[in-house]
Structures are given as C-alpha cells and as structure tokens.
Length: 109
Image 1 (cartoon, rainbow, N blue to C red):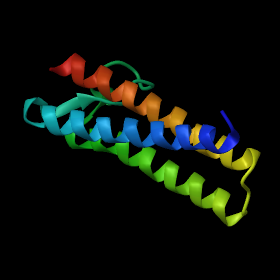
Image 2: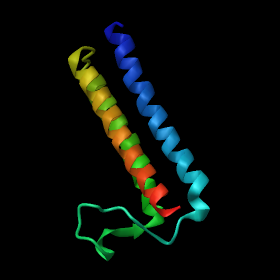
Image 3: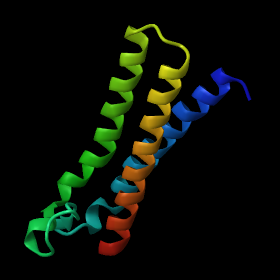
Image 4: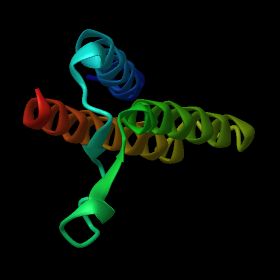
C-alpha cells in the first residue's frame, strides 16, 4: 500500500464513520428522550445530561475536524507526513466520536 492509498483509506474511513453516525441518529431520533448523557467527564448526575439534539454535535465536530485538518494540510501544500497525520487524526477522532454516539444511543434505546 503506497502513501496515497493509505491517505485515501484514512479519508474514506472518516467519511464512513461520519455517515454512519448521521444514519444512526436519523434512525433513532424518534426514540431519543429529551435529555441524553453526553458529558461523561463531568460528575455523575444532571451535569452529564444535554438535550438529545446535542448528540448531533459528535458527527458535526468530526466533519469540522476533517475539513480543518484537510484544509490546513492543503494550505501548507504538504503531501507527505503532515497530510497523513491530519487525515488519520480526523479518522481516529471520527471513530471515537462514532463509538461514543453508539454507546449513548444503545444506552438510551
């Protein structure tokens, strides 16, 4: 696998995770309660809760990070290590955001 294919794999995985996240939200939107646990780093209780509409932040943040990282690498006209790092950082972030969303939705539904 050459570097271009490796970068394309990172970009493809990011887009797949973001797409599946939006799909999961669309499927379970009617079943979501008014509040959902989102802020797990806060103390247990009401401080962890956010409106269910806030769950859309997870895929949108992944999309924003992908756009920022890809744009940043393109501005610097770097096709080597920087592009690879930025694409795979976005892929890892989108996977973690997808995994968090799945855990929240499965907890609620």
